[in-house]
Image (cartoon, rainbow, N blue to C red):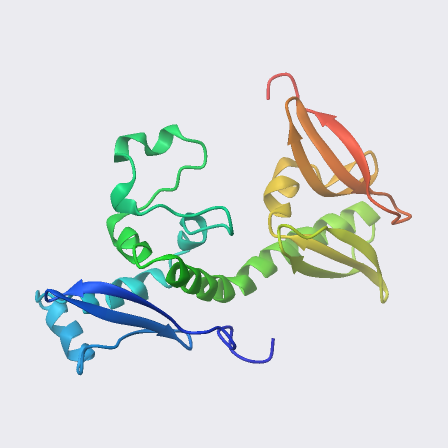
Length: 235
């Protein structure tokens, strides 16, 4: 990517009720703007002093949650995974009774009410800013694990962070190894202590009722082969 993360992403709009009128909010070029206010910055100052302006309040909440990593969890994970209107969700006391229930606070819920396209823009902007930190975390752990597996402390390692739906891979690179792994490898493999099993390096761990089925490669770096691992009796 040579340009900003929002390059070639089209603008999107949403409406909010402000002063009894429908007002337009537009996201474009990485920023959210209120189209129906001549002096929105002045309105934002008045809101900070206790005034009321729905558009200014939404812009404040947007800025606040643009750095909120929870956005990556509570917004949609893709097609077929719509996020319901928070105002129509079941009561708060039931949130934790459902697997995968998404926890939201009022301010973030107000931003999510702007609709799916704007949710996507908020999530994508945050994901791009956080991507460097996520890649660094993945690189450090994968590199250390690969060097231990190969028994070469100075082994040259390149790690590409791929999407969660892409197949992981391990191959020989210039003077070392090249790995393509999703960030979820840290949770699914590294955190469970499954990086090396029977002398094979683990690329992925799929849960099953009594353990995991691992996708592993041997020192020869051939195609991944499955290895079944059972949980300890007291796990």
